[in-house]
Image 1 (cartoon, rainbow, N blue to C red):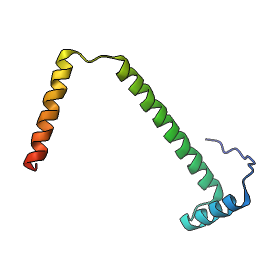
Image 2: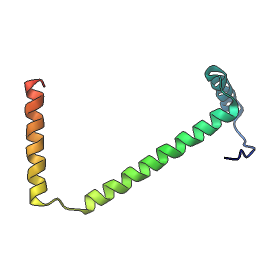
Image 3: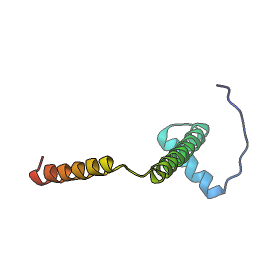
Image 4: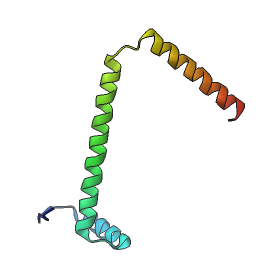
Length: 85
C-alpha cells in the first residue's frame, strides 16, 4: 500500500497531546494519526452496519413460531440464571 503525505491543521494543544501520547506509545505521529483515522472509520462502519441490521429487523414481523421460540428461550434463560448455572 503506497504511503501518501498530507498536511493537516490542528489546534496547538491537541497536537501537543497527540505528540505526548505518540511518545508514550512509542509510535510516530504518522502512525498515531493513521491508527486514529482507522479506528474512527471502523467505528463509523460498525455503527452504520448495526443501524442497517436494526432497520431490517424492525421491518420484519416475527412469525408466531418465532415469537413462541423467543418466549421459550427467555424462560429458559431465566431458569438458568435463577439456578445459578
